[in-house]
Image 1 (tube, rainbow, N blue to C red):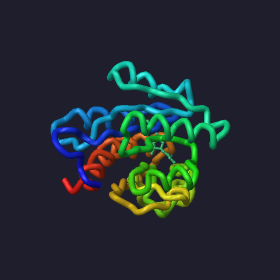
Image 2 (image 1 turned 90 degrees about the vertical axis):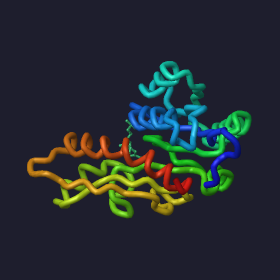
Image 3 (image 1 turned 120 degrees about the vertical axis):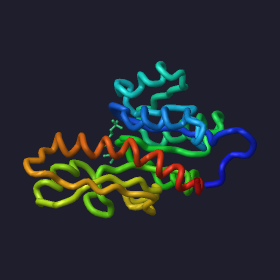
Length: 193
Ligand code: GAR
């Protein structure tokens, strides 16, 4: 990614479906002087997503699209991204799959965070599957989004050692804490900072 010219940061939209703890960490990072991005828009497919409250707290524009008709929602979404000059999209716990057409329009400009060491454990219920398979390590990955689920080029990963008596909840919590650090680092990396 090439940083925006002048003093302007790259305008970024964060897509969420739930709690939005990664959104919060990205907002905090974006407001530091070293951040190459500003967060100008929060998008959700879920009007009840807790993370939408951060729009009010941090005075950021928000928009909800149902995605019941993906084609229609994506058309409206593309238009609002355009009117807001959005040049980077960060998926952060966004549980809808974007169409190939949408991804092509933002080629190389959509990032995602996933709670596993990709290419292992794509998809849902990662912690449960990791524990069932008695893995020694799990972790999290920030990657570029392509048309295949959780398959784009990896930007950064953080390994987390699985402890004795680990539960899905304890592992999820420890990985989430690492996610909050990894996403900002991955953004610095794609801007060569
Ligand atoms: C995070 O653990 C994120 O990696 C995961 O959802 C959680 C969202 O938490 N994303 C996926 O599983 C995507 N396939 P948050 O809403 O508190 O950021």
